[in-house]
Length: 427
Image (cartoon, rainbow, N blue to C red; front, side, top):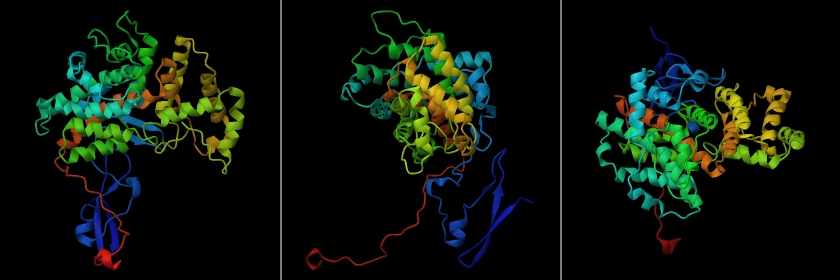
């Protein structure tokens, strides 16, 4: 007999089944709560609410575990590639060599954008934030690809998924090129997904661009580490938009808009700004002392995590990657010295250890992206590029779920009760 949860509310005793997943916390199924009792639950931020059933990503924040389809993120980041992880998230299993080759070929041949979109870019101000451009251009894709917006057709859904994953690097690179006044570069089919993006971003038509293999591997790892992260704010936004039957391009544009928030996708930019504020390694003790002072508003950005109460498993991979990139690019910027020494000092400080304020993936990724040459305004755009595969996988899973219905959160109403209208002349 399955477990049940008993509740006494509105003078009634009711029981609800307790559902068990393959791993993780049990879930109390309260779908009939309102119908049986006339009451809602109250959970601001939905932090104790399972909004869906999913088989993509599992997180155990207390243990510092992140699994994609059961595979630990550390193993995937060290041994896999972003294209292989994309296939895994979309299809549920790691590909064979033939399946991976076919998938990579499919993505490669969808990387070009409709030529009219280049004109669309020119409608933005030159100093527009790349995320504003990404929101607009991704949303506009539905105006160009009418043959993949029927969400009831599994084949069209997959074509739309492939298009979004393939075109996002081109869209992001064009947003960067537009901001610096350089000509757009077309994709090259003989380069990898990540190598192609680097060339489209930093290459120029006047000369050949040589992809640095260390940088390419580092960026590919960053993409893997940001590919999916369970039911976070932007993923929930994609699912909520998709629950209405909106086309996939509109859903991903909604996810990009949510990701733009500094509490979500902008955290790595905030971490790098903090390192610039510290400026020199000898000033680190001063800022650590400020972080401990309850009366000082200063906080160490890039430390701690909403979910992880242990070391962020993604950060473990990035520690090694930081040093590889610094060595390959011969980085001597004092800001990067600040990052390495701040990490070392914080990990040894009892205050941070006791409060489990460990460096997270945002602390390292911002440092690496800056060393590669990306301006801070591009950081969140790169996050959106990588997270697109998670968004489309979650969207596909939701559309295929027979229990899926349009999202409709409830509320605790605290406004005025019913009252009569008073004509303006009598007020």
